[in-house]
Every structure is written in C-alpha cells, then in structure tokens.
Image (cartoon, rainbow, N blue to C red; front, side, top):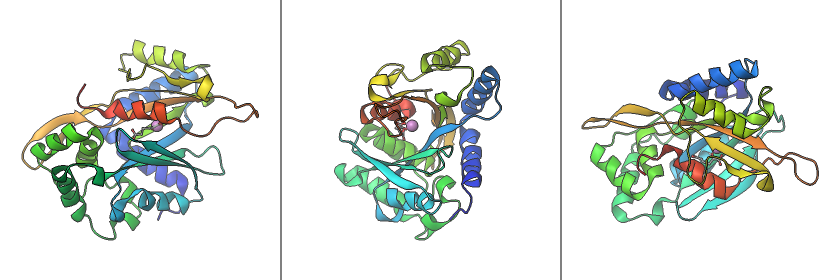
Length: 269
Ligand code: OOG
Ligand code: NI
C-alpha cells in the first residue's frame, strides 16, 4: 500500500498522461488561461471487474488505507456496472470513483474471455503498491477485444488498458479564470479538443448540484497478441459543483450523468 496520497496521485498522473497526450495539453491550456500552475482535481476514476481477486473493494483498500471513506453507491443497470465513491477528510484531495463490471451478467463466451484474463493475474497483485497503475496482466487477441467490444465497451477498455486511472477531473470551482463549465468547454473546443456529446455536452447542472463534461478519449496504438490496433485510451473530465440548500457544496456523483461519461472511451458510435 502507498503511504503518501500525493505520491500515489503523481504516479497515477504520470501513467495516465503517457497514454493520454491530450490531457497534458488541456492541463497546460487551462493552467495558462487561469493563470495558475496547479489545477485541483475533483476526482480520479478507476475501472475493474467484480471478480474477487481484483474487485472494486480490492482497489478501494488502497484508498481506505490512506484515510479515504466510502460515501456513495451507484448502479448502472443497462451497462451492468456498479460503482462507489470515496472522499478524504482533506477536501483538497481528489475524490475517488471506482466502478466494477458485473461479469456474471454477460453471455458465457464473454465471461470466459474475462476469466482467462483475470486467471493470469498474480494472486497477490492487488496488494502491491503499484497495482492501481499496473495496466494489463494478460494478453488478448484483437478478436477477443472485438468480441468484448460488441458486448461491453467497458469490458473491451479493461482488456486493452487494465488497472490505471481512467480519467482525471479538473475542478472548475478551483479555476480562477473561469466561472462556469460552459466557458471551459468553449475554450477547449476553440483549441480543437473534441468533447463527449452523449446526453449533451454538459451532463447535469445546478438542479442536481453537479455539472460535468469530458473530452473524448485519445486514440493510441495497442499491441494485441496478434496485431496492433489504434483504440480509445483515456479522457479528461471537467466538473463544477453547486451548493445544496444547506449551503454546502454537493460532493456526490449523479448516476444519469455518469452513465454518459462512461461513453467517453467508446470505440463505436
Ligand atoms: C466513470 C464514469 C463516471 C463521473 O464522474 O460521473 C464518472 C468511468 O468512465 O470509468 O467518472
Ligand atoms: Ni468522472
């Protein structure tokens, strides 16, 4: 387990930008406009399968050990996913959003591809310091990738990329130059970045106390067991939080919005 939160997120960021070059560029662009070198992250997100060896709880353990607490649970029936979010008492530390695919809800052929991948993981891997940015622990063929893609974009993404930050999220509330998410989006589009328009460019809003947008994932070449393919890697998200009736900023997530954010890594449609 990591002993230092900032070191963990620094390592996660390094791994993330290596396969998400646009995130580094967006980071520089927003920092320059806002006149600030440091951007505060609203949250960082992770994906996994609901298989004991590496399930959501195994990922969460790393954050619980660093003082994070579980704060919310979410269900995505259509995508066959569950998620939880975690917060740290130090509100300047990023929140953590972890989802897991309900593998047993998929057809036999899909389950067997996933189980073959997971069987290849060392039994102690999930406890290792670097597990959260350890990537894949298996090899898949491009054919298996395509089979997964037809059943679940999420499963295919996991097969290609494994364990790592799926996205970082800029806290718009902490951006000095920008007041609202729409202005951030305009700036990004002007600079040529492509935003996820599923469910609208801005998901949610003041009425649910959270507005979110994201880039579409970069496309990066991946070596499969048989051939190379250019496929979606990771994306960058932007979140603006609003005060609730009690005057406090909402800290949770919004399932209907999250459902669309997942699609930022879609290879199809
Ligand atoms: C997570 C999508 C949900 C949010 O902020 O609502 C999410 C994912 O794509 O793994 O990050
Ligand atoms: Ni997110």
